[in-house]
Length: 115
Length: 113
Image (cartoon, rainbow over all chains, first blue to last red; front, side, top):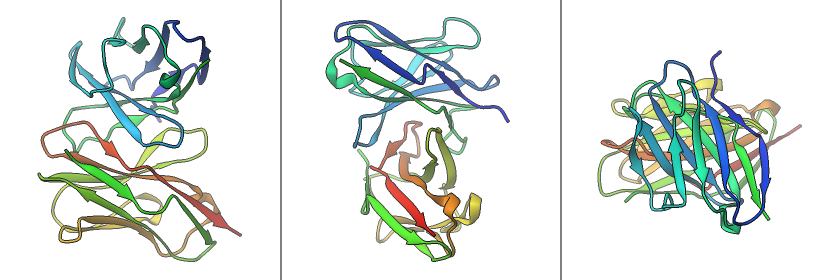
């Protein structure tokens, strides 16, 4: 069964460093998403991406964050200069279409720890 | 803006007992409602969704949920749980014209032998 894969499963980085989280969405999907979950808090929407551009983003997704689809398979989230409060589980998701009745498939997450 | 409240952070229940996980939402516009499950070390998996029509929605693994507009609730139920149902369950909502999901804080269901 096709699945969304995320690498690495756990990343530790020093405060102020740049980090790139990688995702391989399901191959025929067109919409891509990033969510995050700070420990003990809710899963929060960060950004959605379609046709090589951001279609929606939340207040959390400030200038420190960027997304890219560098080739035909990967979808990345870059945090330019990490802060302690960026420590969280980051989930990538993809869907065939953008309609809400289209299921979004989630990856297993990347746990980012900023020290 | 919409929000989701999951009233119970932890629900322990014995195997073969029924369970209800509660979810309330608030929104000024029409919404669609979802339940996701997360097993340990795995991603979020869709259990069921309410878009329109019948207010009783059946999902995978024997779960069902009922949309109650007057009480703004979307509680998840299963008549008889198994050990394998132990997981974290998330209620989520989205506006009818948007794609982003707003999640609740999650309920950890632990099924005891």
